[in-house]
Image (cartoon, rainbow, N blue to C red; front, top):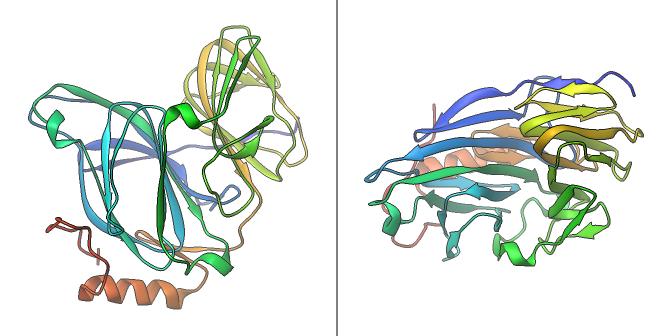
Length: 286
């Protein structure tokens, strides 16, 4: 296999939740339609505290939240109010304009709790970036899974690895959770022109080359490397077909600077769909 290109994530903090963010990076602005990849690190919240990301806007993308531990409440300007637990998919397509809130469910604030998961953004195709916003929830039991020879695969979104997810993606997409037992292996198929692996936990190799933990490894186009588990390991596999150049500014993704400018002006002016029952919001950064 060609030499792996590794993306070392940068550390961020969102409302007290530690994050590792390999995408976007200076070398890789996207992998397939994925323009943003956040690993929400394991975090304990004592009683009386929790995650609270206030009302904020999006355009031109779909967000996907997938938890390994904990629960979140999703609310948006479409009127959605959904409790999201481990293994569920919370899928929101922003289109021309949407606002949402993500927080620890109020009924859990008095308890000790733990959070761990992933949130990704997928850019919409140019013809659909101004579509009507939409939200759908896909419980864990609805996602396709396979298990054989020590390899567990959950197809979170898109299609691949002989599975197809019910999540309504807008372009060719691969997003899978992989769990391998010690000594197990999986040949990564050449199903999409862009692919990458992110090692969440454990020890693994790709064609004999060590995968650093909490690092994204970009798989060379056209190659079918062998993923091998040195011990129990947990990974995310993302990929798809290139979506074309995209601009990203704060929470906005678009194919033109004009769409970004319009969104910034509208949010700053308060000309934006509101989340029912929410009075606080995150202001536009300067």
